[in-house]
Amino acid sequence: MTMLIPYANLEPVSWKNGGGSTTEIAVFPPDAGFDGFDWRVSLATIANDGPFSMFPGVERTLVLVDGPGMTLDIDGAPTLLSKGEPVAAFDGESRVEAKLNRGASTDFNVMTRTERCWHRFGRRRLDGDSTFVARADVTVLFLAEGDSLELCSDDQRINLVRFDAVVLDPDTKWKLRAEQGAIFIVDIHYYDDEDDLDNEDGMYE
Image (tube, rainbow, N blue to C red; front, side, top):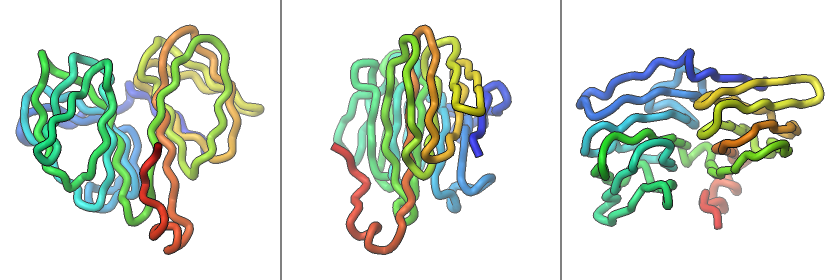
């Protein structure tokens, strides 16, 4: 079932180390903890330099939404997260240290458990009408920029404001209407059998 997730209804949770807070957008299974999710999408505000938590067996994608960004030290290799290069992908078991550039940053975070599923992240600029077809087992759209977005199908109309998200049914077609903005697209695919797990490395060109 297609599900709208209004950001205004979500509650941020402060980190134990005081370095920031996380707002969980969607997780499956519902209410799963950090050890039990198949996939998880969240929004985090990083307020101080410091280490990331480790998630063995999980693939992560981190995307800058607001703020000046940061430098991530990923297993000893520096990666700049900025408006020009806003996306970083890494293993959840990597040792990651964040050093803020010039202040707090807000980041979009996708995590998938590699033994069960994998994800693909994309971005699309919005300027007028366009179409979108949900082709994955699970597709999450997140309004990263812009005041509003309207999604219309043959039998549904959904309105989003900034930082709202919507989980779409597979094989559904939508018309997107927005004056200006950008969406993040998270496609989550489950492995059909053991052969898929052996042959799919979860990476995209």
